[in-house]
Image (cartoon, rainbow, N blue to C red; front, side):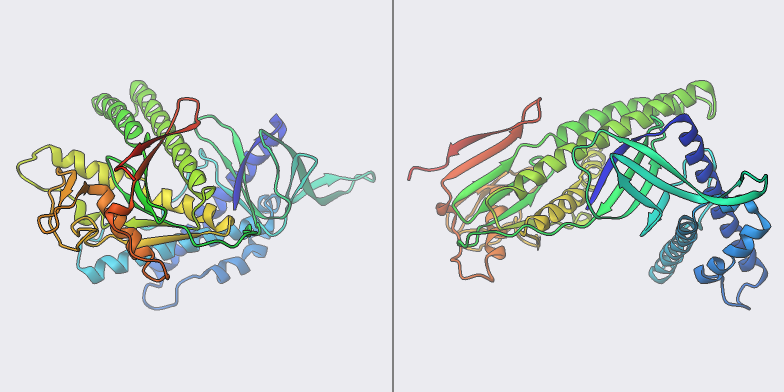
Length: 439
């Protein structure tokens, strides 16, 4: 798991961290330039430059440029690994586009600017946490001893950590980052935890959710309850999309690079930052509520987003709004990632399910009926079952989740209670229970 903590470095420590960042940027650009020159000079005649080759040259590089001695050796190796990773990603995308016969839009790695902070990666060693301080190691820097001789010693700085509840014990690695908007330094601590184990043995409790854009999650569990999350995800995206579109329209009418263009660009970055923060907070709250719930298995449908793209000529400009909500603003993958690791930590299971025909199929008799996206109620012409569109899909997904167990298949008449969860302005969860049919 990863914990993000805020650092409070002194002015001297801030200058030292920025110096390490510039050295890492310089090393990245040198490695990138070496690979580019080798490709232009020996293209298809000699093997390309690899990470092992550039890593072996670090010793000679430090002799030629003593400035690099101030950079911790493992941090320098991680910079070279980042160059290797970026090139592999570029060649992978390029090869995929060539195989598929599409337009070659993959771009090779570019040089980095020293105006932005380069992420410093400490792997295995070079750091320690003691008494609420993060002790970071730098490289070998010169100093004058008592006899007046110039010697080299390793520099270490103890940076104060603020705004944390409990620091992890066994930290495997960490990264140092700097927020471009606020200028704050953060440390992302990567540590290992042991999954929690249940003390009691009871029948397996399963819940399956049908994700949607209008209603974020609609689920059904094997206890006869319909669970609905009235999330603020749609509200947040709608509000910030309107603000971002206004600022983009104003910025595009300005001359690029002008004072007004820079100011509007800063406003745009702030809007993106606020939207991301509110979205992550909402998704973490939903994942935590489900992980701490009574269910042992949480299944979520995995829809085909390409199949949800709308090009109906009757909807006109509405197609753009639908596709934007599905393709750009639907944080389903991120929510599943949060839910997966929170469930694994508590010894529970996250189960992705294929959503194929889950909406069209009747959960009572199995008859398939293709519905328009505007139709929100499923009415089966065969058996007469009437149920909400999302609820019908959730029941079908639940039956798929319990298919490998000894539990019986669920019918729509087995569900008698609908529970709707929503968060208040203070961040607390409230729920409303509704009786579907008399017992």
